[in-house]
Length: 250
Image 1 (cartoon, rainbow, N blue to C red):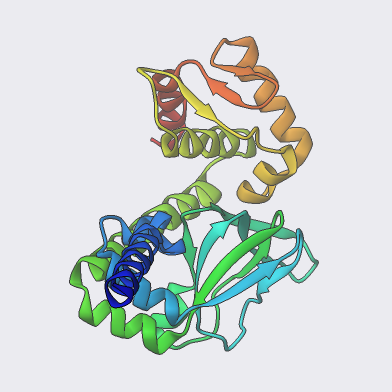
Image 2 (cartoon, rainbow, N blue to C red):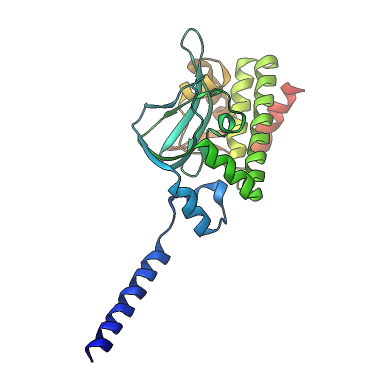
């Protein structure tokens, strides 16, 4: 009788532990790179990672640093930046939960091509270079997603270089708004840029001043193309904004 009771308790305990294990979810599950990834394999990758916490305005990686870890944003907001000799900040991209960065240095083994800072308190997982490269070899679908992302970075960089070389400052602001509008899901001809971008952030992306950004936003609002809400910029007529940008790009 005692043996049967003990066996029953053991079975219940094992069942409970199995349920707990099955309910565990990797922190990497919400990273876009690992979409539809095998949970068991994802757990192994997470075990090779290190949890990192960064406070708002804290530098995560420095440009030209020799580090080569790849970072996955679990919670928070980070910004890819570089600084001119005079100290002027140039913004390349904003990254949020689900994004990753650092793959370029991990792939080519060269120093960091840009710095990354935490815009707000953030939690990240860092994966060493060797494990990241092994993962790309073992999981071709992940390697393909990384390649597609790198292709997108090249395309965006080419477009920005052309804009900086050929467009006036007000047109560069319009082009940046169009880029941000395209990155958001559109409803017919409407796009929502949220949270509302700060004038200095837009200015640092297109190498102009906050005053120029304010002037362009006001002009677009008067034309009915753009509307400010408390938390977002709403592009009311994406095709019209696109036509304006295409006209000056030629």
